[in-house]
Length: 477
Image 1 (cartoon, helix red, strand yellow):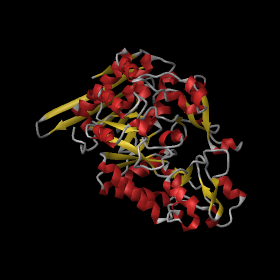
Image 2 (cartoon, one colour):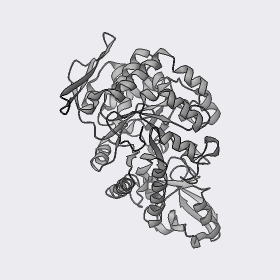
Image 3 (spheres, one colour):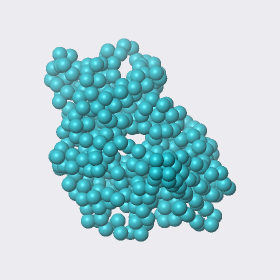
Image 4 (cartoon, helix red, strand yellow):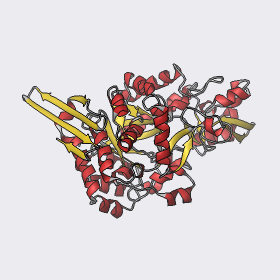
């Protein structure tokens, strides 16, 4: 396949780490080649050398983790499959050459303005600090000893992830250089990790601030487009932000889909899912599971609070410790009890019911957008409590690492074979080039169809998915 092939309605991707299936990129390619009839591309989670957060704290976007292989191994994949990978846009590792130069040279470092020195922000009140979102228990900065003395640099996530200063041109120069480098390696879709955290202004929530967020978004869209790539901003909040992203040329993220699909199948009620699918933003990427948990904020407004709370309690019975929002960590209860992510595999969330799981994958594959299938979802992985215990991170419950032979053997499971057939259908059927239609039926029934007219060849193509939960029936035509 031509690596420059454009994303389309027949695109379908596998989400995977470089060492999730096999120990490196060479072994991963063997797996991809085995399922090539069912995929067009791959979302390769960050393969960069990193000291924490499994690639999401890069020392550089130009240096691969040595154990994964080299850029030739990367290009062998991107030359045969549409390549999506991450740019970590909010921060760099404290081990990066840029931050280490700041440590060594202080304010004389040419990289000093790449990061945010709290002393340059003026007075910050206790109330100001309370507004700032952090993904850790401490205040949102690190005390770093430089040649000029101890400095406080902003970090929203961990002490190894130093936030970037989007008021400095140096950030834009650094990111353009990164985009240029990665597109030469075959990347055609950039997932912009933690983009919502880039808008920082004391006295505000410092997250998804408008209109600053759109200024940064537009820059990434225009710059990526100039290098022949598209963008997939990672944003967790109300669906309206996904619409705003789509209107500005980026791919939205259908993060509302997973909890809505879970609710529909567990409680035999498609009403709320249908409401979402009638107005799902376009263009968009759909997911059911990812390397992180099942996110909750994105579904607010579509699933009533009472029903959402019911779903959360149901899934928590089978998963592990949920990720909380900052407000909950500060003992401030919000609308859904402070839950940010549910940590559970999608298969376990559906009570390991094979019929419901196939229904879930079919709904995703027949929904508008580009389906991205998480590797552990494809392989129908169960909760990995051992990894949670060993690595002390509840998200590891859905990050099982498979030996290559183990993964290849799982492809022979009947349920996995069915999922691959669904993916192959989406990849190859002409109907998905056309019009999407949602059919209103009873609450326990779901139907969607696609129709495409090829005027050049005077041919018409159609397909449909029908699910009846009370009759335990699924039909694909």
